[in-house]
Image (cartoon, rainbow, N blue to C red; front, top):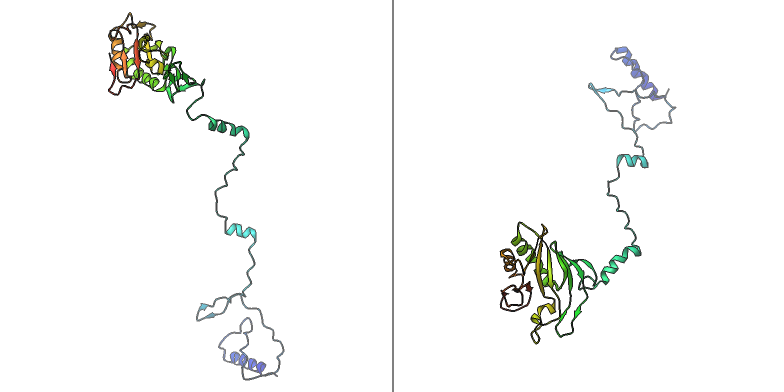
Length: 289
């Protein structure tokens, strides 16, 4: 009989004889082969499968044997999505719509507009001021040297007050008329409100007071306006000729500042039926009578 078999039988006999332990449910694993005792090939020995629980050492359970390492398999797409969700990113903006020829037309038209302002004949706000409305006029060239207006406008309404008829002025004079209307005219007539001004004169290519040989009038430059009457919100009309009262004189006095010249009844005998306002440049302050 083979030596290893004899040794196993001897050990088993000693254990039974002395009564030191009960026989296990399964045969123990064979001892390690002695390194110095070469022998011929042994016949296969049946080894029962390992128990589900490893034998204890000093009352403590031994850990289960480490399983053989199995090469990791590449994760499937579904696993990648579940374990590593894709980062949240903002959606791309929609593509910019194509610009058609019709959409480009307004921009091209604006670019081609003259730099000086609206074309002659344009109706609406004047001089870049919404309080002044009327029509843009073509440049005026008079028959006399200096009797011209480079950028005239036909003013129909000033701060909501109608001009009857419309007055042809340059923009600085139109702005002065607006300032007087808001800060001088309306406060002077309060609590009544002026809704219309009767205009006796605006642009006219003539000499001062229509006197032969006199200097060119400010009317010939688009810088003067003559007011002959005031129409109130209750329908009443007050004329300078017939109703030159305290209220009208107060309104006239308030024009000294916005305008550089103010004339009326008693000034020089030429303005008994109207108030004359202009924006002449004297270089020494306003001239108000």
